[in-house]
Image 1 (cartoon, helix red, strand yellow):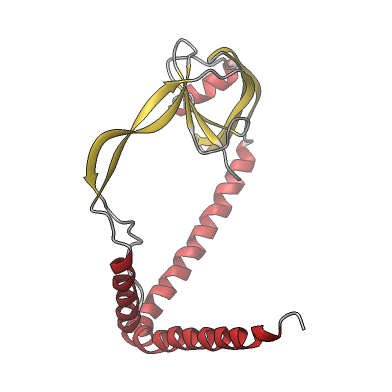
Image 2 (cartoon, one colour; image 1 turned 180 degrees about the vertical axis):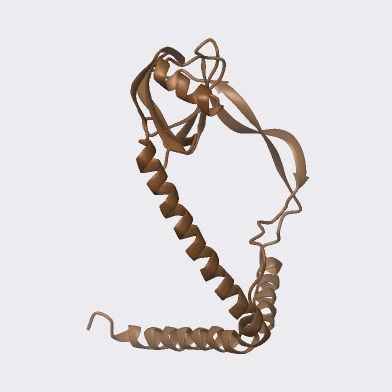
Length: 227
């Protein structure tokens, strides 16, 4: 999929054929307001087009206020006791050299007017009423304002294709549930009570020993490089 930017349309009614409008109405769904584009910076930025056609770029600017620094959490720690003990000792040693900040700058999302002059396409592909809907609009922007937004392509997934896709998806989800259940039973019965505290530490420290020995060999043999 790659990188892209988000485009949010606020207060503007986008053109759409009657068949497309009716499908959204019959499905009880709102017409899409969020789109993506690959024609701008592709930095996962968010652009907003307001009711007057003005285009804004969302920037996260410091407010001058400091807030408590919260380290990134990776969720449940699945490592063994010996691994955690070893890693925590290393982290403490490193933190002695590089202290972890207690506070960081607060940043707030701010919409900033752009001076964008470019023609770009924005698209969305989402499931509505059990069928995928594909929309592509062409936007002509001049000096930061959308002068024209035209629908260039649209498609509603065929009902038979959607039914077949849902059946395939249900079968896949059922297989995944069975697979995860078997894995959970194995983990609860064998992995966490036994293997986690025995086999895992052995592999962890054996790998470190092999890496250290290989590093010594490479360092020792480097004297003959270039001969």
